[in-house]
Image (cartoon, rainbow, N blue to C red):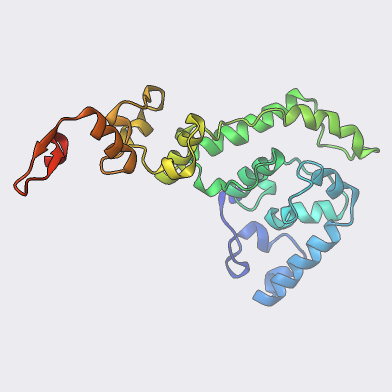
Length: 242
């Protein structure tokens, strides 16, 4: 497995490419590796190469924390890195999160996307950067020269977050579809599994589109289904007897 696809969630369990990235970090204990990491991040934060990288996501303060130690070492030496290179990120999710931050949607968590959506996000951004003429091999003499190209590269997120299919979990799927349909989050939970699988078939008057037992379903059922008498003398819609 490519080391870039591993998740370095804790310093004590850092992958091999993290351990061998500095001259002496391999023999340090957990605390030592944390201090070494902090030193690298601080040194990297001072260089023009890092300033250039940060123009991709100026509001993402923790960007350096998501880079591998090799990437930080290069930045500390004022060597450029390509944000589209999977080997510069500590995990695939971190790479995807970086792209979301590039488009100003850092509040969305890449860990909740499907694997296919993450692949489309990563591949799409690499293509957008190439089409925009971004050159990540050198440090621009005037960083502002990148801004126009970055604007082009960030014109459109490679995936549609309003598409339920990009999300891995039902709650996110419902919220995405509800937003697309103009409903707030309170109505999102009323959407049925059927309509999540067939989002283009949504019809507000179709009972299949609403989760059975939800407020929206009951309101619609009351309009469409004939009431039937129960043993207690109360009325109920015919569908509710099942």
